[in-house]
Image: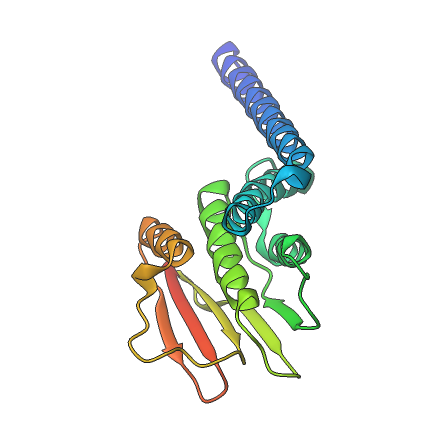
Amino acid sequence: MDDHTKQLEQALREKEAALKELQHRAKNSLQLVISLLKLQSGRIRDPDARTAYDLTLQRIEALAIAYRHLHESGTETKVEFGRYLTELVTTTSANLPGGAQGTDIDVQSEKITGGLSLAVPLGLIVNELLSNALRHAFPAKSWIRISLTNPQPEVLELVVSDNGRALPTGFDPDADAGMLLAEALAAQLGSVLAVEATGSGTSVKMSVPL
């Protein structure tokens, strides 16, 4: 091995170590922010302020979970989406007032991995769609299904469906801040959210080019 190759390999190792340290610090910083926010939760009395607080906390936790899964993956560059979304769903439903309220939430994902540039917006989109679904009134036997598949080699498909109340006539996703955020994140991924009223509730689909 010549000196130039050794220098390149050393530089690569140093960059990998720096990236690992940066991600570790980001993960710890997010956990600190979450802890500080939770210290203030008992002081919030206004219902609208409480809703805004809960949604903000969920969004930050979605980021923290992504960084933790990246750190635990051993690769420092890839997140396994099925495991990530499963933990995200558990955390999001637990943080909402009343939790999942008896709703059966099922995450089905093929073994798909990707970097933070995909994991973070994907997780935030799922967080917004799940929060929106859980805030709706549900029938006695309620469910939410989250599916992530690779229907084509260069396409990732996310479907979030539920059997909650059907969308009201004239429903405008742009009137909801959470849906606006989800749509903006979908656009960031080069996709759009397709919202559809089904016979049993609502389905939101997104196809992401990889």
